[in-house]
Length: 234
Image (cartoon, rainbow, N blue to C red; front, side, top):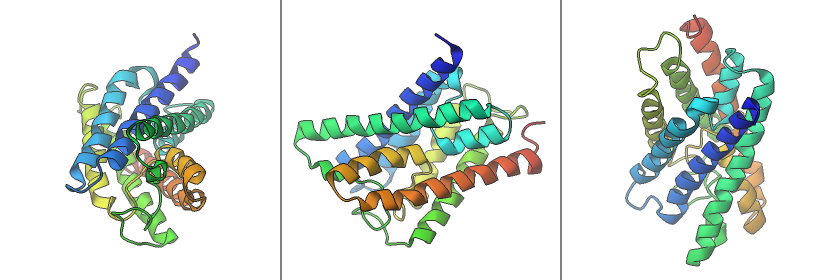
């Protein structure tokens, strides 16, 4: 099998794992006991995926991360396109897993609507602009940490990096979960939005724009700061 195909498959399965475990925790466990269980579900799933698939593709599982990597020359733009397609399909597959589990336990399929500001039972109402800015800021810090931890000058070993990145995601989710759900990842939002549009309301596809614009702009800004401000590629 060609190496590019392996990379795309790794991104597909890693994103599928992240979305299935993370959003599964949201819709099946909820945040009744606080945001920590959900945050840890996403963080540990990301770390596990990075350990399992990172040696093949780099373990992005997120178009915003792939954009930052492409801007800083770590992957080609051709691979960026392949990564994003694989990640979006992986997000759909992860949501399909959650949907199948929900159907198995008799839960309402509309509970998969974990995309939207003011739509879920734990969010604080916020405008489209506000949600976009929050996702931008949180994703900026997330991608910046990833680019610096995995840079040539980083002191963190390749063994430690996935856990550091996973814990960073968990902390940032705790910060923003009550407002936007702290997606920080267009692929993570895309799958649930499509499934909610199918089983609930098409407004989720309108809301999902904030979860594309914010993270992608945040990832691009992080790439610029990492490369030109902090010298990550030197």
